[in-house]
Length: 122
Figure: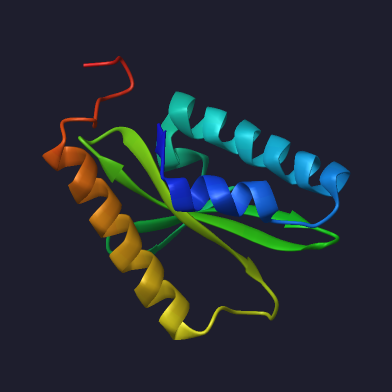
């Protein structure tokens, strides 16, 4: 798995209270581990296919709905590009457009620089 600087920045600031932020990050970590082991077959409520090549990792907490957007490169490697916190029932359509562009650009940049590998490190 690769994680972009934007996604890392989101995780570092997804909540202003450190203990809550740590819990949210731990839940994201468990879901990423499941994804690495079983792929997107783990499905809802952990991941959701949004559209095209855009997927989201879902963490719902009493403090909010936290999302990391990712794509899959080389058939198997997760490329986490960005994140957002939902403040309403649904994101505005523009958020998905932005996330899709961001994921596509991040995966392409990794491919250009040869950083994308499959789960076995190849």
